[in-house]
Length: 410
Image (cartoon, rainbow, N blue to C red):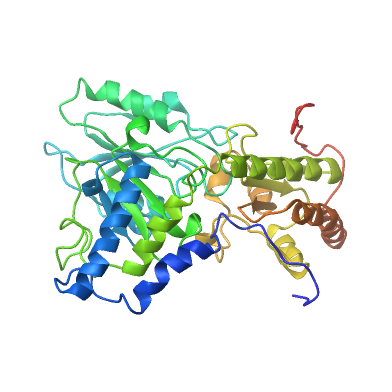
């Protein structure tokens, strides 16, 4: 990357930079307050008190009891542990798990592993063209042996926001007449910064979040486990985390998670600014680049996400070309960045293989500026035009083109 070029980071969906105040809160627990939080001497008690404070902060944010917050290594561990908890037979039947077709790979892979090993039956609920869950299909999929529904709050690739609260109400009504309760889980890693994670309001039994998506450190997250919910211990060893997750506490990370959660409060104006910049990007791309279309919903979408497809352009080539111009974006989930397989999310939404491979995700964040968006809108059209000229695959005739409402962004 050229030294003299302004660098633009538009991959906040993959990770966020560590907030300076979060780092300062963590710093003492790497050095002078280094004690093991499970030790009963003064060094350990310093760490234990910090863990308790972070747990209370997370519980207040989630509107739950501190005893319902389990610290993990991140959303992937949380999602794995929830899905794999439902592998025990129900009245002699295999447990039945329902997930959406656009879940994060860690949910999909966990569910598919249970199915492959003959431990569970899995149903994947389709989504419409905008990536919204087909609610009627969800209702029809519920069976006597259904034990869990897992639906992502905000999709990591296209930013689609699912009706979690509505699903929670539907399942609560169904559970009134069931002997075997259906539990409800949501992966809220991409939602935490922008949407309510009040677990009572959402009606969930499990919720996962990750610190590094909210300007906290990597390698730490939290899992809400509603009291009384079935949950199998995922890590064996010690008795940490109410005997549900063994292992020495990552005290600096847990402190960082708590500090990052505190920074989420009272940031409505920042969300509004992010939304305005995101809309400026969407409108600019649609106005300036022929054969460009927005993937996913225009309205039911996280305010920081814009996912486009560019007819006649290979996404990886476009990503690399933008990187050379100092602009960092992604082709989708960071976890699948090295995979050549087409996005299962975009395929589930009805895009063909060619369209999935011509798609890019732009995800904005706290430090995104108008000048950065303007730079992207200046550079992107030329890069797309250059790549189309090289490939020779683009004909600006009969191309499916997205259309924005006349009042969009007003």
